[in-house]
Length: 318
Picture 1 (cartoon, rainbow, N blue to C red):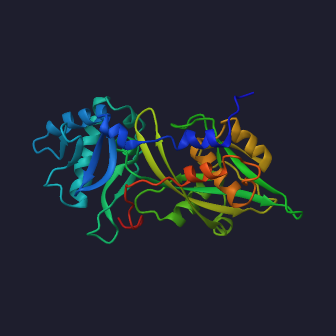
Picture 2: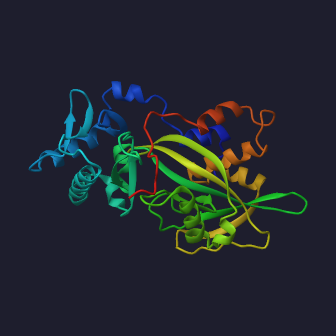
Picture 3: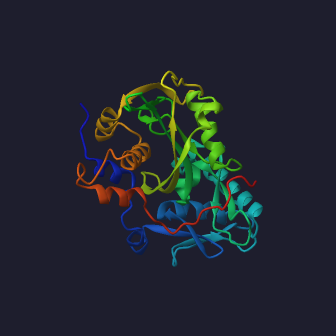
């Protein structure tokens, strides 16, 4: 039997950055700025690796100050395309050097880094997904709570088990569908896409999903920092519908009672941010209350972490 924790300990496992300012003051982290807007945070080790690659170029695209503990683009990188191209060049060279572990999990997916108030979509530049933790930029995703409701009102939840071939969190429990929001795909369309790709849910069903707000957390991983916002959806599925793996990212699906799901959460069997989304569901639907959960308020605080990094105003503009 896996070691059991509390709901709060599981939430803390995901939202585990307590005082970023202390890390910066202790010279552990560098701030990453674009046009004087703070957009991310980089470890001291990675800052030195990035500086070596940038300084080796004929016209360095990045300025790294070991005195100020900051990273920013050079003045000539003054457009979205220039910044995106310059960053791609740096990352490809870092990947080839095999000195930055996260880049070994290259995804060929671009994330948007927001904060530019001078353009309508608010996008500063595009960044390879594998580098998001390296630069500590804010990322975004969609998570779907797939549930069934019996005639008697009993709620069960569909849970997926991640494929053992997944680059991250292989074999752990997951929601019925979830995924990052990449460049050019909006929030709603990302949800529809993930439902189709991961659980073979036809759009005539997934289009009935309801927005359920967001959760937000700041995770320190072994290789970097990840401030992340998840758009959460609740999807009531027909009782006779059975999700099936489609794209190889999920091995199998289980239909469990909420008590069974809670038990698996406390056993730390869920991918951390999936556990967060389900805890949010349990609170919104009255399954976790101040009466049955002594850490109720602290759990809520940790589901909605605040951080200073800005967001794009649109995910669909390319």
